[in-house]
Amino acid sequence: MTEDARFEDAAEAALNLGAFDLDDLTVISGLAQDAIFPITEMKWQKGARRFALLLNRFRWEDTGAGRHAPERVQSLLVVDNVMGVASQGIDRSDPDVILSLLTITFEPGEDAAGNVLLTLAGDGAIRLEVEALDVTLKDVTRPYVAPSGKAPHHPD
Image (tube, rainbow, N blue to C red; front, side, top):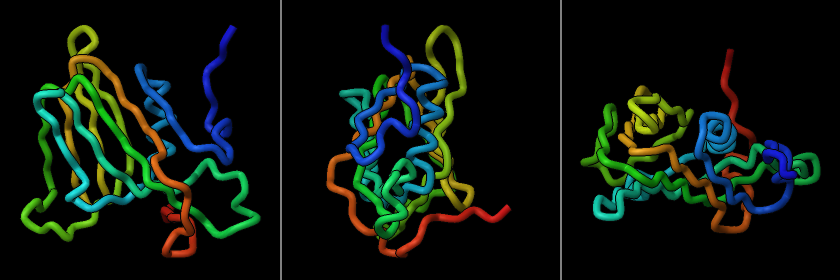
């Protein structure tokens, strides 16, 4: 018998998670919260029906935070089965723009289809029209000390 992965299961290991339902996506959203990425690290491969982001993800799951400074890690966030992409509040004309991911949610549609919504800080958003929910979050580098030296904070 297998059981679902839990947030704390990642501990010090690199993440490699998939989401095929709302519960899975909630875990990935929590782990990707406050990830930052340059606008140039966002790519839609229309022919492959894939949308990908190279994120600098804060390591919320890090159980060693008491032993070392807060860390980030580069991660790939990949959404498959993408039929269309739309965005708002993002200035694509400036290649130096840095975006911050707040949440990843799913708005169900007909059958298994729907929209994956990436909500960004500053009222930006990316909507991915998908045939079915298929999201992957995979760490692709070793963790590094967060340049700010502290964890992201959201005032109440």
